[in-house]
Image (cartoon, rainbow, N blue to C red):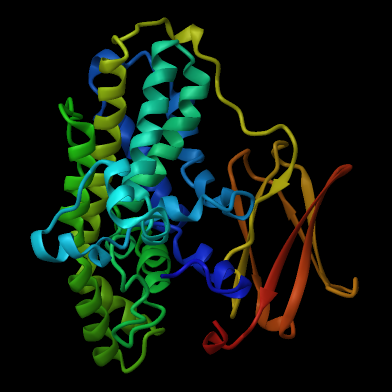
Length: 376
């Protein structure tokens, strides 16, 4: 059980359950377009780029939608039938009838959230609503990618059951950020999926087998480096995990492409001219997404979107009493999300507000600084 604890834990769990981090999610969703068959070439680059650029939207919704977090994981090994037989009932209603809604929600509903996004995407294709389809495709890409991350499929999701607390972010975010340039893989052709539900569950069953590999790699890296934060640790960690991590991402890109292709086929294979698809756009106002990590121990990131390239914007940080503690001034470089980093060690332990200012626009986000990981 990991969601119904108390507010600080809830905030931390939102951070934990964030798939491959923004870089990993974008990588998986960027490459799906190269897997699509030539007959889907009518999807212009704006459509496929939108899917990649919004691959983390589902994460950003977690602080507005209390039901979102459970869609990003499934503690599948908390199901007795999985431990015994290696599988569970694929029908959501049947699982709820057998185990109860509270249990099912508490273990996470990732496969059914993936299936729901697929169904919504297919419906959009059926009515040729290509712009709305791009939103569902972005969410589908996020949930598919979460299903390729082994620690999103296990009850020992953060190493808390094996004395390896913190492994989740070390693997999915910090390691991926260090070895981002190594995440290069050939693409595979999308396939038509005869049974979408079975396909989704089957890759979850397959990827669960890598849980122990990640945990053992962390043990090896810690013993090799004598810590879990140095360059030597991450080098040893990547040595043991790099090959299968790249393959997991490769599988994610293929799975996303195959699901989009199948949804299109099932919708009747509608064909259109490139000019009938509008270039999807980000919201027209400057905005700051939820701060991460939150609570923060050292470095904190402010994800911002400024729809005016080359314009200047300001992030002001206030304590809870309203005292200005720091000011960050940056120039926007594109209309994509920019992650502005800040050293939280400059702040005392407590609650803070960050205020994004761009022109006459103001957006506020709250975050917590703890410094000591044991506080989590």
